[in-house]
Image (tube, rainbow, N blue to C red):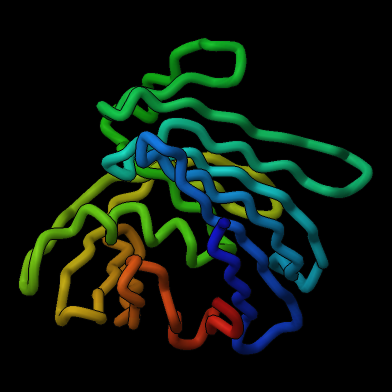
Length: 185
């Protein structure tokens, strides 16, 4: 049975529901829906799926805008830092990115957190960043540092943003100070 999680934004109306399940081979699938507000206060709805291999490397991500435009982005990773679009064309601008970060969900922080070693360990990574609701894809540098058994510091190295994230035993964010808080799961 999948793990069901709900997060809500701290300041704005909105909600995210994600169902996280695992295959017999240990692969993970996250299936989420986000209702939120973009820059300028425009409401949006999206559905996303993130598929990971047994080591929690992103292998596929799909984000669908649930509006009249029905725009979609679909990317496939090989687990070694190479990406292709849904047609299979290589995306060399994303080479070296091992994870995906969807702007409006704390779920994607779980991907590198699951691979982070014990207390005091830090990892600097490059990610495929998908900004919502515009579906703008770019690369971003991030650092994760394990501060305690249930606390990880996240740093967006390109912007200087940082937050200490309380997590559960599965590496899922409990609270993203000022941005998201978990209400179920």
